[in-house]
Amino acid sequence: MTYTELKNTIYSILAQLNPSATIIRADGQGTRPSLPYLTYKIENFESIGMPYFDGETDVSGNENIKYDENFQVTLRGYGLSARDLMKVIKDKLRLNSGIDILVANNIALRELNNPITDISLTIDNTTEKQYLWEIIMGYAEQITDDPDYIANVELIDNINQPN
Image 1 (spheres, rainbow, N blue to C red):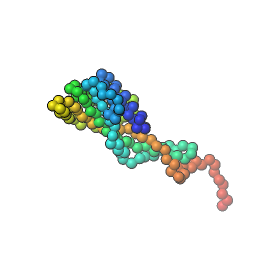
Image 2: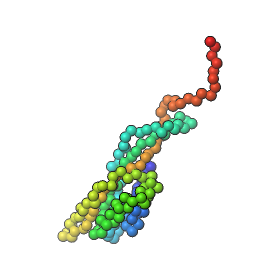
Image 3: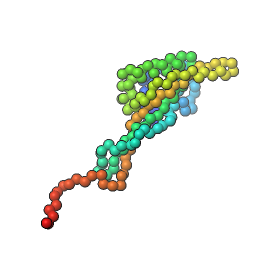
Image 4: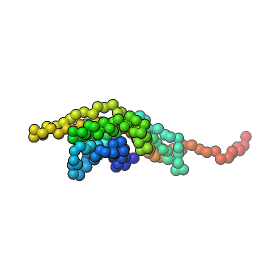
């Protein structure tokens, strides 16, 4: 899965989990929407465990190698009721319907227990409510490897050898 595909997938998941929330990418260059809204960013990629060979070899001798990739989705909420928008997503991820959305997008939920933290700022004697929440998710990645050796041989005929 490419980074762009993952960003689009996570956006789709978040939008399905809370259709009433305004959600934008944190690294976008667009105009700031009206409050409340959420931003999301994908970061901290980490491969988990050893890659494994799934037992399949194609006609060219290439092997399919699979491994698990974890990543962090950082949500920031802006505005007084942004915490409520995050809470809807968090609660929905605890339900079968939320898990079904993840499964349909080939995403696994790894960690949901991080708190929604108030990180409000005071600028020019005005407090802007801001919230931060980090979710750990993952997916299975598949890559192809040419192992540079023969993985298996198929015996098609017996060869009679003289005694």
